[in-house]
Image (cartoon, rainbow, N blue to C red; front, side, top):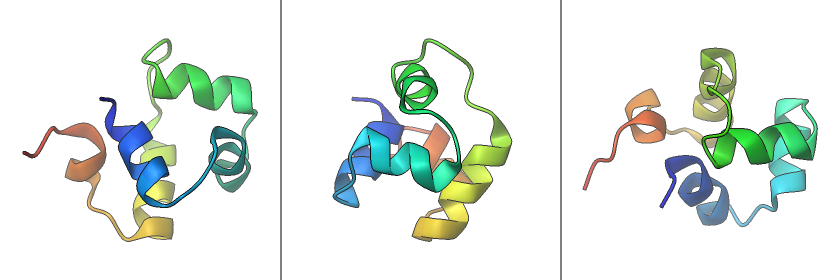
Amino acid sequence: MNRLKIIRENQGLTQTEMAELLGISRQRYFMYEHNKRSFPIKYAFKISKIFGVELEEIFLDIS
């Protein structure tokens, strides 16, 4: 499962809500979450700050 999806679901957010937090369209967020586009580091920093997760948690599969 995609790390972005896990983080989003753990926060109880929809794709639309996550996109709004990042200031992007839901379609663009969908593409990031499904690895259709590269995920810009600026959004990773934003997610890290908003949700208090480490950057490694966003990009690495830490099991």
